[in-house]
Length: 298
Image (cartoon, rainbow, N blue to C red; front, side, top):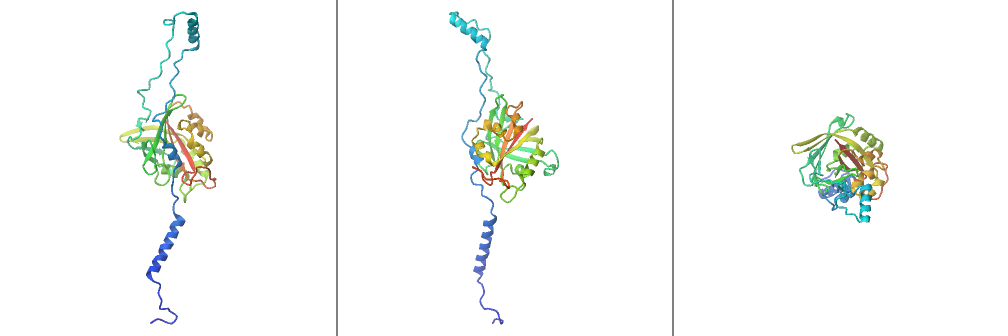
C-alpha cells in the first residue's frame, strides 16, 4: 500500500549506481591533471652523445719569430735539426683529470645518488628551510626513473663545467625547487611572473651542499639563476649543451660572466609550468612552459 500522492514505482539500485558513476567520471574529466606526454627537454638531452666534450688542446705551433727563422734556413738550404732554439709547447695532459667530479662529488653516469641541498638566504622563501633535489646521474633522464642527464665540457678558457638536466613537476626530482619559485596551481604555475622573478632574486646567493653516500661537498653558492621564456625554448632545445650558457646569456645578461668563468661550474636545468598570461610557442606544453637555469660555484 502507498500513501496518497506516492508512487509504487522505485528507482532501481542499479540506476542509482550508474548515475553516481557518471557523475564521478564527469568530475575526473573536468579536474584531471595534465598528462606529461613527451618531455622535449628530456628528449633533447637523452640523445646519444660523447661522454665528455673537451675544449681543443693548446696549439703546438712554433712562435711566429721562430717559424720565420726556421723557414729562412730551410730556403737557404741550411740544416735545421740543431737550430731550433725553443721547444714546441707541450700539449696539456688531462689523463689524470676527472671531468665528472665537482667539489669532491662523482657525477659519472651510474654513480651513487646525489642530493643537492639549497638553503634560502632568508626566511621569506620556504621559511628559510632548505630544499633538496635528489637524483641518480645518468646518460638518459626519462621521467619517473629518478635520473638526471649529465654532460661535461670545457669553456673556451679551459674551465670544466658539469651540466645537469633534472625533471620537475609532480613526481620530478626538482619539484621542490620549481614549486619554491612558481608555486603549483591547477595544471599551471600558481604565482604571476612578477612574483617568480622576485623569488629568483631572493634565492640568488643561497648556500648549497652536495651529498653522495658519506661524501659531502660544501662551501658552495647558487651564484646564478634565470628563466628562459616559452618563445626561447624551441631554439634552446637544439642548442649544443656547451653553448647553453651562451644562448641563455642573451635573455639573462648576468650569465655572461659564466661563459668564461674563473672556477668550475655546476649547472642544472629544469622545466617550469606554463605561466598565466604567457602565450603558447612551438615545442611548449603545460608541463614544459619555461626553462630554469641555475649555476653553482665554489
